[in-house]
Amino acid sequence: DLKGEHILVSLTGDSITGIVDWSDAALCDPVVDLGALLIWLGPGFLRLVLEHYADAVDAHIFDRAVAYERYGCLRRLGRRLAGLSDDPLDLIITQLRWAFADR
Image 1 (spheres, rainbow, N blue to C red):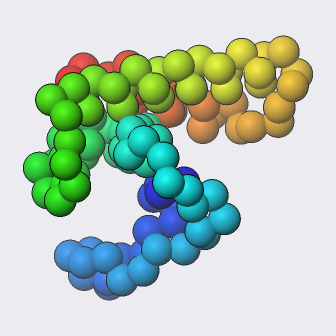
Image 2: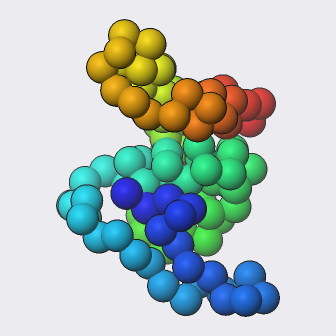
């Protein structure tokens, strides 16, 4: 559940000062968190993060994160349109734009 609103940064914006909301902490594929970064600030941001990612990554991790989030965004949109969720439609649309943005 690592995403923008859970990352605290310094006043100058040059360093991370904290991470909040650990309720979804899990041992899982890093694509879950990397995909959340994609729909927060787009593919360029995800590429920048991956340049500094210290853990082992496979050659297709960027593509896997994109595919994971595209599916997730479409699923959230479908649930919202079917009346099965009250997720903000404007947020879902923003996330869809990032998920399908040019790489």
